Structures are given as C-alpha cells and as structure tokens.
Image 1 (spheres, helix red, strand yellow):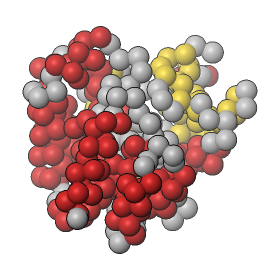
Image 2 (cartoon, rainbow, N blue to C red):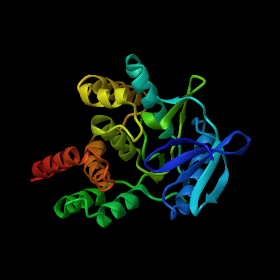
Image 3 (cartoon, rainbow, N blue to C red):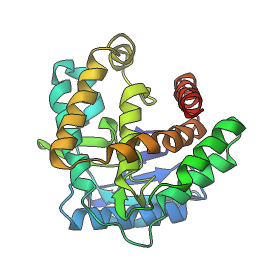
Image 4 (cartoon, helix red, strand yellow):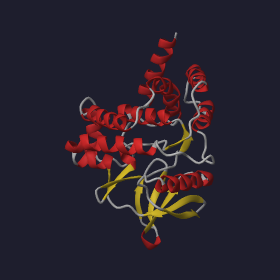
Length: 270
C-alpha cells in the first residue's frame, strides 16, 4: 500500500476507489475505530465538514477506517509554508471548533470524564499528588453531551478546495465542550509539532513562540468566542484534569511545561 501520511496515532494509506485507509498503530483499537466512524457520521449529518466514512477493516491485525480521500494541506503544514496566513488559520480553526460543539453526541460514544479519569489513574507519568489533585478537580465537573473531538488543532484540519475538513477522530468522546476547548487552548499554547514536521515549522514553533503562536491562539479564541461562549469558570476548572491527561500522553517536549502548569495550580489551590 502507498503510505500518504503518518501521525502519532495512525498511518494513512491510499485505498481503492479513491478512498484512504486510516490504519491505527494500536492493534487493540477496534472499538476505537467504531467510535470514530460513528462520530464522523453524526458530525457530517449535522453539517460539520468531515471525510465521508465508507467502512472499517483490519490489516495485519491492525484496525482501520476506510474513508473519503481529502486532498490538500493541513493547516499546520500551511503555517509552515505561509507563516503570514497564521491569523486566518486561527480564525478558521475557532469557527470550525465552535460549530462542532453545537452537535449532540450519540450516547454510545465513550464519556469524556471517564476517559480522562482512566488515563490519569493508570499512568505512572503523572506524579501521584498531581494525579490526585486532577482527579479531585475532575470529580465535580459536568458530564456534558456534546461531540468532543479530543485532539482539535490545525494539524487535524485539512484545507481542501478552500474548505476546512476536520480529520483524525481517534480520541472522540461525549462530554462537556469546555473541556475540548481547554485542550485545544493548551495545545496551541505549549504543543510541539507532530512527527514529520518541516524544519521551518519546527523553527517557527521555537523562535516564533511569542509571536506566531500567540497570534494563532488569539485568532482561534476570538473566532470561537464569537460563535459560542465558553463558561469561564468551567474553563479554569477543566485545565487541571486536561493538563494531567496530556501529561499521561507523554508527548515529547511538553512534560516540563505541563508539570509547571499543574504545580502552579496546586500551589494556588493551597
């Protein structure tokens, strides 16, 4: 099979009849693929631009999702090629995310709160006192019933024929959209470029942290808030469990920043 792309969760291969196969690295993720397919169908029916799903399959013991092929650049790659477009890319991202959060999620999707709790509890990457702090904060937060992408950022938005298309639904859940909003906010503040990023994009992430990153984040926040108003109190409360969950994901280059955020929140909590 011809490999078209690769990320932290999966590889993308050309498939038959103009489709692509998104093949997960984890051989035990069959249920995850089913959730992903279900969520994408619901999003598409609600008017959110996503690839059409054509079915699921298994290749060499790994589960995969067969879907419409979307040709174009993702918005993160576009930043690397056209840094001057960062303002419009942030705006597009915010508008799309707000639109997604208007969609009610099927009851059959995993619950966001339960997913965060399970990962934090099971991880030895989160120091025990920080894990307990995060789990305590999580306990009092609302369940929610919205479609939450779980990994929404410009690298998961393809620009195809001038239209943004949301891809990579591996971490989809049903929950409070404020939590999904917080995760994206956090990733735009401290996130590292994914594997395979160009040298220019990596340089922008480092040198441009105070400029390009802040412009992208500000444009995203303004566009999102114009479309829907996140709950400021819940946004603040969600940051602790969301940061702890991200710490458990063990993303290279983020650990020190995440620990600093959690330690500061713990100290402020007294």
